[in-house]
Length: 225
Image 1: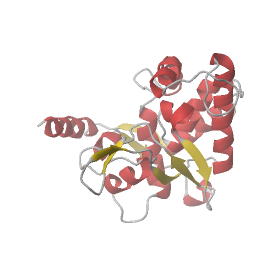
Image 2: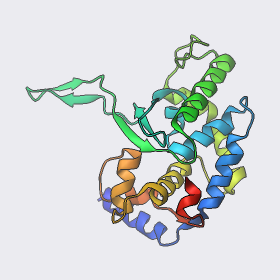
Image 3: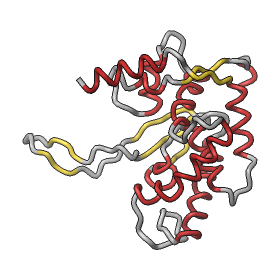
Image 4: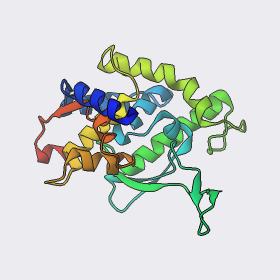
């Protein structure tokens, strides 16, 4: 019943989608890309728009690796990871396995995006003494802590860029729409493409929550290469 109620709310909200042009999103990405390296909040917002990762994933949880195609990136580990699995005897056991998936990148190449993530993590380690895996800090910290520390600033930056009704979480939906416009195969629906792009469960109503935005395409195919 809760899922049905939520799906109705999402459908009603999507009846009045927020429209953004692809050029506007790319201009914002270019602006964030040009920000000084020490402005790690801008870099967090940049990664969010380019690959759709959550704050906790950008700062701590996910590992990013290059693929054969520099327009795609391999992501290892997500914040909403299932920590349990069923063994061959039907028993629930803890699992250390991290989800892995490959997703497209908006505007950047994989090597640059990885460098940005490493740099912003190093700066956060130096600032807070956290251990984020880059060797600059030694304080163990969890995803909840890192998100709470930078969430307000990231939301403020997104609102400054896009408008007062926006929050950082909207970067996932904007990314998903941009990825569909640029990388979606002909004949494939958004509802099928978005779960593959964001690695979310293929529940029929969940992908709809990432269709809040409508990307108006202004660029031609050749302009995106």
